[in-house]
Length: 94
Image (cartoon, rainbow, N blue to C red):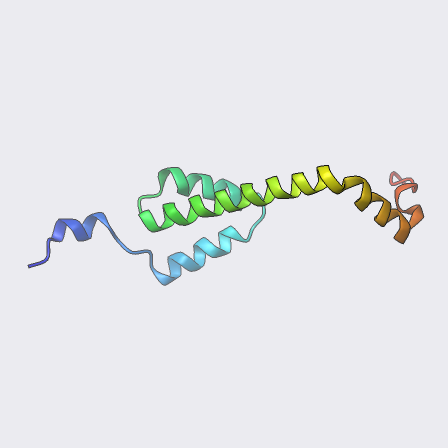
């Protein structure tokens, strides 16, 4: 006979719950805030694990982007200037 207490502790996230999770994960800035909340306080382990994985992946991508900009920033800037030399000399204030 299945133990009813175990089923109360672990409830699956519904399809609608996952759809809401994914939609909120597509909204910039809000996604990071929600991932932090879910990673540290979600009651469902699957949502907690998903949020933790999203945070780790986002931080790894940000670190990789920072490394690429640090190593190749001057070359990227020179390439951008070769496309449009006035791009970095225009007055953006008006």
